[in-house]
Image 1 (cartoon, helix red, strand yellow):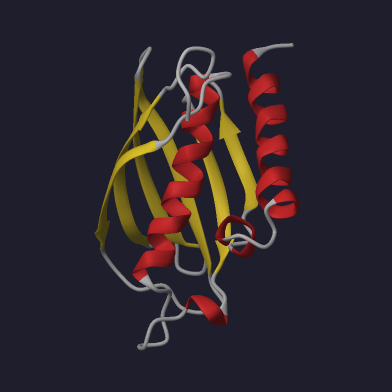
Image 2 (cartoon, rainbow, N blue to C red):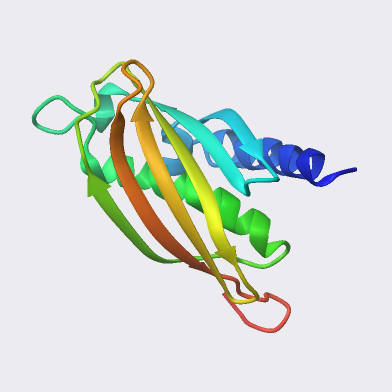
Length: 152
């Protein structure tokens, strides 16, 4: 099996874990959908339907929910890069550009820019599916924790 096939199988497993095994958590309630992945680019793209419960007082997707979509997507590529290791979020810096309407779909792409033994750095973009316009960007860092040597 080549790297692309390995990543696709990994993403299928991740989607099942998020949407079925964790359906009562925020990961499951976000109802992410697989858009695609690229082993060559070390990237994963997920879609997030913008739901009523995610609205802020202005009737748009709450910034915290955009941040959550970034974390879910970036964590997926961080865990892929970490292999069997645990990969907790160390930092997540979000820049909001424009609002996303309820009923739209937020399309998030996360790309690992550096994947080392201990740290994975990731950049993200979120776009409105309806308009194609950039809604937010993010930069995040994840730590690769060897679970055979360290406790979570």
